[in-house]
Image (tube, rainbow, N blue to C red; front, side, top):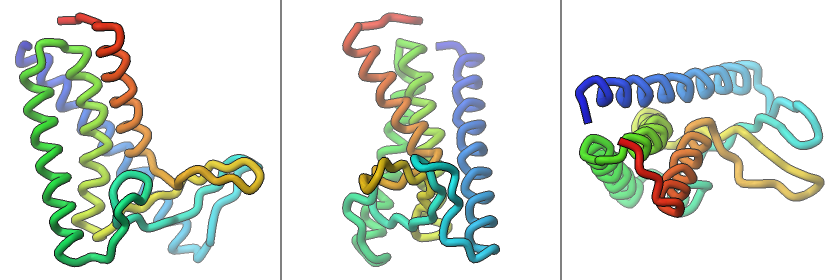
Length: 159
């Protein structure tokens, strides 16, 4: 992979990280500063702030302590492995999807260290069924993972 392509990948990561940060700052500003429990959009979507100290979708949610620190270090290590994989992959399309994952993952990792928790706020629901509350970074991570699965399923080759 050329250096020019690597620069594009890091620009993509940074852009997605910034989009995630802006979304979280706006939500925190509007919900916390205005003391709102939620922002109602329609019968399927609300913005409702939930602090997630676990991993994806609140799994392994624990209080900030040594176990939280260990999970944070493991997540940091996984991000470093993803950066290495992105830079050494022979498939540029695969590297793009890894970059999308990293854009979201680094957004959530920033929150883990800055807030000791990740602000999730997108609440999708139908009737009494609620999906896990998530954020923009989670959307990026999901898109990246789905992209990698599609590449692997169809053995897409793109250099």
